[in-house]
Length: 402
Image (cartoon, rainbow, N blue to C red; front, side, top):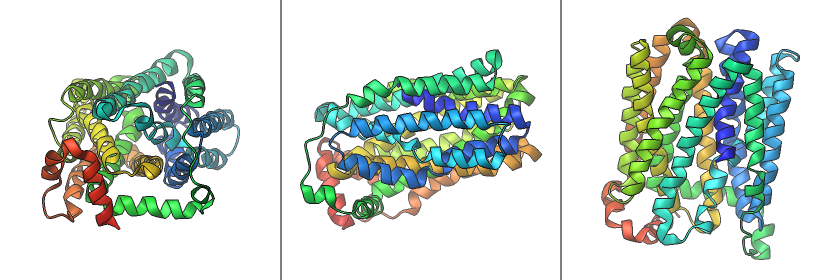
């Protein structure tokens, strides 16, 4: 929870710090894009190493240390070094970003009995929502009270607080020597085949990644929304906390009824809810902006829990870490692309940037149906019929994928 809160805080804090130094939405969103865009490269490799590690917790702890160090170095360089150098450091630091998201969730089946996994999965998604609530709120409050640089420092402290929890994760029984010494590229290729070969995984991955593009576009608009609509740049970060409040509430309801709706259905309908929220944000009034943030959270929280459920169901145990971190890295990169695109657009027209984000979220829902089913029946029906036998579903999908 501490690492995720620090991670959720670091993006808005860095963006606010960049905006405070440069006074430019373009440079602020570029900084956010820099620390997120490289995750597509780091995530799969980190996941493959986690799947091989006898002590995955030690590997996670090392990643946390390096990520926190990178944030500190970036903060020290803002306004002192050429901005391109700071962006370069952000890109390198971003390689480790998936450790703060998918790297933790991939360990869940090893610490939770199988029968409790659906509920634990929903509760795990709630920690993301809680972190999304605490992180941006802290970023906004600390930035208003002590300055944006202090917000970055607090995020570093939160990340380092998670080190003991990572270090003490259970030891994985040793794998066969051949498996440990086989080229990492072989594991990377196997994980990619699983994601592409499973219609459920492919659909969930595509829809959630495109949804994250829209979320990145909204986040790039946050400083201007705070300044022009809410009366202060730092107040814009509080909109992310409003979204997190409703996401947390939605996931709390989902945790009580974890088996009542197929996760595939939740994935695409949640994208539509996010599209509606972004359309509401174009109105520009403070009240409507808060309503839009709350509606966005109702879409984001359940979608995340549903994607987790699909990954747990479809991923083979020896590739679970890679599939989670690869999925997380693609979403983080999608977020980065959205932030990079929306920054220049928002500087010219904030309503146009928000309308563009709404269109992207709607495309995310359509993207779900762009991936054909290989089994002749809708994924929702398949999930409903196999909710009591998720392992059988996963085995069938994996055989079909090969």
